[in-house]
Length: 282
Image 1 (tube, rainbow, N blue to C red):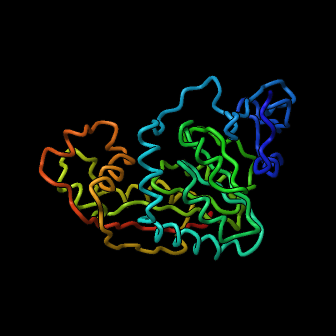
Image 2 (tube, helix red, strand yellow):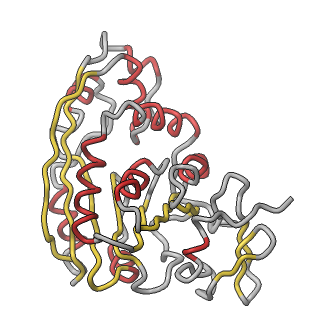
């Protein structure tokens, strides 16, 4: 039986575009189809496969998604989500469209939508495993497979707020799809983020000291910073919590359980330290 059109996806039919020819998409027996005949399946889990026939550059595997779901369910990153929600509400007090690039399991998008009853959300991610969770994360959150490095399957100036949380960035595409009054909100780690774990596990991915400079250089042609908040706090960690936290980061792609245990007990607390900046289009 063909998958039904998810209710959360229907409001996006006016802004979604065929990634092949840029024509509008319409429902067609368990898929989305453009007038030129390009067809994209709606998975039974509720997300639409816009990357059909194309290989994404990256994406969380099943183990990373499981670790992410387990760690985020503990609420350890709730202050980050609260900051995102507050920044979004400042721009979008009523109705509007929020798109989360590299949405993962939909944790941040769902938190924002919980506090903004008039908003609709769309999560884009390269990981099919993550999208299975994202499609169920919130009744007003649609989900679609996509690669952040390619032109987005969205019409020009149809997005009010773009979320980019620990995700890659595509500044020209962010600028194209955002309304002139919209905002791009970028969350990224700073030097102290997870310092205890990175000090304990040398093989973990480090934070580039030039990260902020490179971010500024990439965004400056298209955006100017409106406000920045530094979110920093310390949280307790169980051993499983530490394993899940490492397991949901890019470090998980090359670390083994032996690496986690090679240097004695894992830290029982960790510092969370990120910057959240709201940018306005130039």
